[in-house]
Image (tube, rainbow, N blue to C red; front, side, top):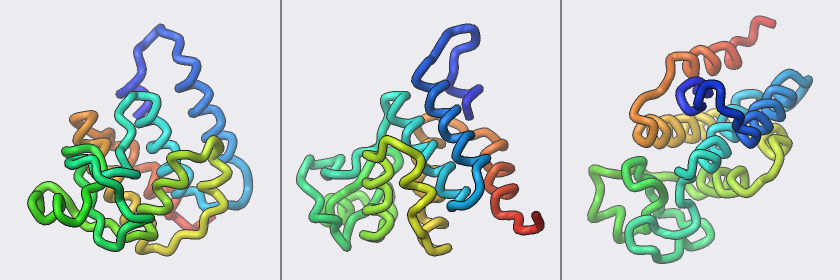
Length: 160
């Protein structure tokens, strides 16, 4: 993922700092390792200027109730849709639960990976987070590296 978004021989201090802090947390004991990768992807999107819109409807600009039980996420449009916009754009969006939306919002504003490590997520929430971020980044980067799948497979392996 880093090779896909970085420019060779060009210093990118913010990208370096994000990667270094994420790897430090990843290598330390404890915490939820998969979630750290989601946090990293959210903050990488911010550094690339493609951060998903999570607090207002990406279509009409209307507020999303804190958080709405009827929100949907559109990778193509780049964020959350309110109930009425989601109904008009069903082919472009998929439902996102209020719990998952709250996690995304919290991680998007968190300045440290510590928040991702300390958040307890159910398997269903991790699956939803993985799907949302995968579709978002795949759409906006036009492809996604195989290494992401390997990283998740490694982190899900419990044989250590």
